[in-house]
Image (cartoon, rainbow, N blue to C red; front, side, top):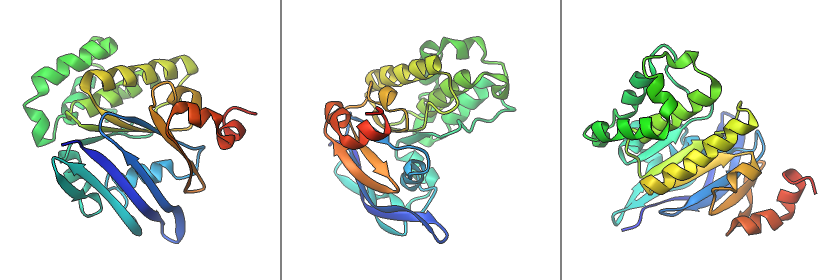
Length: 243
């Protein structure tokens, strides 16, 4: 059976501040879906809701997999990771005083990934050769681009079915953004991953996305069934393309 994440009419926020307003999206198996929006529009809040880091005030979030429908709003983050959903968080969130290899091994903590360490670790080193070269180096001493690669690789160590990537371009030089986005596309194809990527860099995100959503002030204002539809949308022209 195909697996997918479904978000229905989700409302969420922090205290008295409401951030998401009846947000609905779907991410189907094998897709790369872009969640597009400028800073402060609710992308990271939605990602946190999916990962169990923030409980919605209303609405549904569920995983359909192997014929089962699993309510993610009742699961802890640890339980959601055990279901095969991994997150590359905004800001990377590495363990700076641990080595590159130690960070990667921590990514394989979930039960379903421990048996795959001998396969996944060489794969990550093949995908990101700089990590092999610096496997004994402290993660906090690496450049921003290298840390982003490590964050992606750490997520892959959990043998995920679904990969959530939150703002991979933040803090990176344009050439590094291009490399990281291209690597996410390559890894998605090799691992047959399903990917939801929250991103404000429209041009980079649409290089790898199959389709996407535009979120403005916590509401889904447009769903593009293709990147072409996204490019032709008036919101995109206004906020991203300067038309």
